[in-house]
Image 1 (cartoon, rainbow, N blue to C red):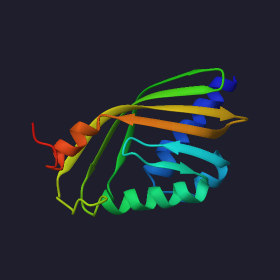
Image 2 (image 1 turned 30 degrees about the horizontal axis):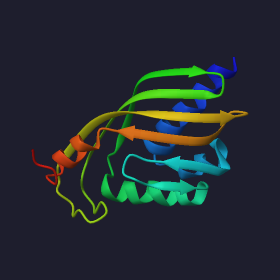
Image 3 (image 1 turned 135 degrees about the vertical axis):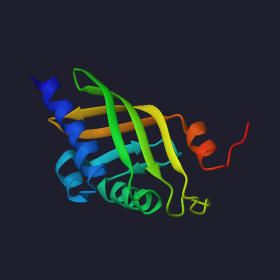
Image 4 (image 1 turned 90 degrees about the horizontal axis):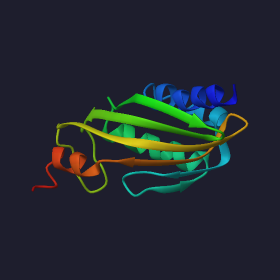
Length: 138
């Protein structure tokens, strides 16, 4: 049963915290020393740093959506295969809003203890993101 409980926590991470922008969920499902490594090069430690990151991302993509295509778990680990999508409506780093729709795939790797996320490492196909935003041309 712990594996199903851990999967439920990761689903809340995406469905409530990200898709519904409910930042207060972070206090319930992330450890105080939560470590995050994101596809865009962000390395964060702690709930508050992560909440700031989510708010920054929301400013760039107010309609951001996380879709879990597949979820697997073993022991204290949960892995998700994801599709992310949104419309670039705000500044993302040095990139001014383009109005471009984006969609790209990737995976999330989570480590939990006692149904709280200690660590998340997100790996996405950022080449597709940059291509959609017009900053990568091949």
